[in-house]
Length: 622
Image (cartoon, rainbow, N blue to C red):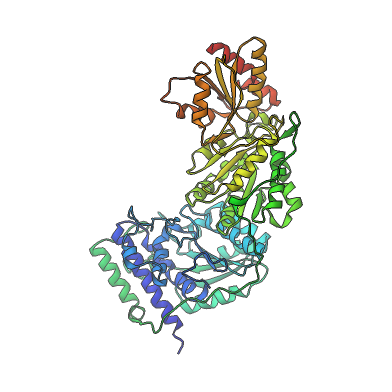
């Protein structure tokens, strides 16, 4: 007699019971969404997926992403059933000293991806699936989604790119339980409409009763036979399945069953599944081992990266965005784990220079920045070094994905070009004027802003080696002269003092395009025998506070910051916050209003961040 369905039903029962207990003990959580997906997760973990539980980072393991991260209790319950967690661990769910957080993070070692903001998991899965294709790995990526999150546009960005790349190694599952947080979902139980949509996006789509163990076994077998396109399984389920007083009812989302109500829920569960509750496993279960493959092995680690020297000459003009492209191509030469993702602006970001040399590791993501960022997370989680580039302003569109990447401690390298009003005639919609603030706010992030080709090249190398969080490099559209010798060094948390004397009356701090304006101001002030110091703040976060204080103290205790960015959250704010307990006079030149189209030099003047504005402020201070 085939005992597999009974075994899987028993495991699903245990997953439901522990999902209820976890949230009950925590007095918070989302147990009803766990109950709808328990059969799916049971079939996946105890029958379908090939993995080694004790070697979670085995590169051949199948991957499981819980995109509906509020069902975290279900994820922890399954790892208890597998043997990684204990029941005592589960009792600490959502408590401050437990790694089992309300939505999955990497505080729990067997989390595949940090989720919780809906609509992100499928994109991460696409990155992982592309990584498997790139490295010739046989693992499959499974993404469990909620039906509510299919309202997110990023889901469809992921859907179209997975089809474009013919990713037949990713299988998505929509847990269609028809109830959202406060109301019915947009499509309710109209499964055919889900089918039509995913089919239109190029996916092979199946429907299944998400509570029929045999049907689930069969549908995954069918999914594994599909070639040349991704698979989406639409599973019809019931929210709160197994609890008679909560099943398929509104008002129970995010509601834990506590005390007597928990006892009542567990009793209801046992009555619903008496055979599954009484089933006794025979022998010791273990998952099927991963399928062996003959992968492309890559050896480069971020800590060992060393970019070759450059031969840029002082005075030579080159846009930092172009220098980025050359550095990226060189990086691809020395490191086989670097991958590049671009949002259909490769000729503007100069990422095309990498594509020309390393086409197999370049991924065109088209105009879909949200999906692009989370794809990068997927690559990072599988050991790649992703560089992701677009116009700096368009990263704001993907801020939620960037925020979640930071929560997941992803090591993304983000590069934003076309920053500030200095881009000129394209106008305000194309001007990144919020990006420094956005990236500074991320935990463990670094923010870099080179002013010439030499510093750009060096800082790309620093980004490649940085592995504690997200790094952001801000590049400029227009060509600027090389300021540094080709062997100059640029450290994370540093700055460069370009001009200094014993008679300085003001310290000017600039970066990128405004550094060049500061140097113009310096030359003009020198003609009037006014001495100022000039700092290149190429690293905005972390800030070199010690150097700034030292130079400012020798410059009359007066500081002018000048930046091609809105005043809020930019360089001026960073310097003011760092020096708030010191006796300095600080003036901040920045963009204070909505800009317009115009020539770069006109706009720098109009918004008071050019050399003339700097000179005016110096004269005011002295």
